[in-house]
Image (cartoon, rainbow, N blue to C red):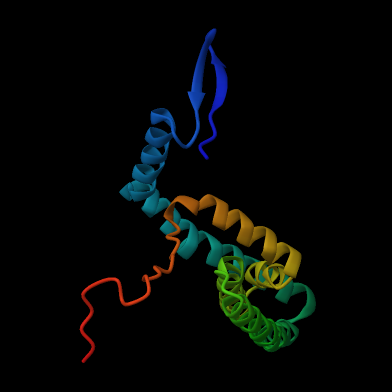
Length: 178
């Protein structure tokens, strides 16, 4: 069911929601912004320059306080502990995906949670304190569940729902078995 929300805009009632042209236009504008080369450049700078620079600064600062060997030990420790936690929770997620599938349900939330676990594993294997904090946060089931729900809601319009088509008895069409 389409939901329309009415907003006051300079004294006029205007509708907005999934079925309104203005909502579709806003979504199209956001899609163009994401595809904009300047936006992609900004995200690239953030991911590949700013975050590593902050990580390097944190490693130097903490290394100055507790020592280089202790920092290296922390990096190895968080990598090993994080990897074992990701493996354990990943196996549990795979089990839940199989259970949902066996019951005939689409395991969308579990699959998104699995992607969050992959991200957690990558972040925990990346040397640095900031990435470790985010990686360990993704290992906390309530945080992962909230993020999965947010991502599913955010990208709901892109999720394709697969439906099984049932054939009527007797084949119901031109099917040639070879």
